[in-house]
Image (tube, rainbow, N blue to C red; front, side, top):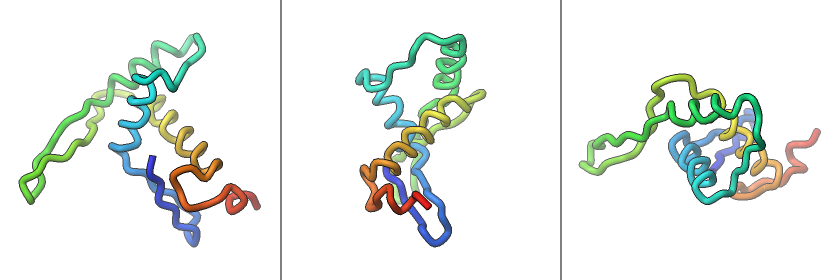
Length: 102
């Protein structure tokens, strides 16, 4: 997940489509394992409630995007948890965890 950090405003921004792609790829490649839990069916439902679509840009190329067809909160919770882990570890971003500890 590519994360753009604005240290002056204390915010981090994620590319929504790329972030969701990353989570789905991690499931596909068995890099995410979810322990059996009562909410597992809800997690599956929320993951299926984001549908990958394509639209044509002004330049004539196509870009992917996701559209929500139902509740997707659990999926976005995974996206944010993964992004937070990357911010903490400093992976894929030009920062170190010491900059987030105050």
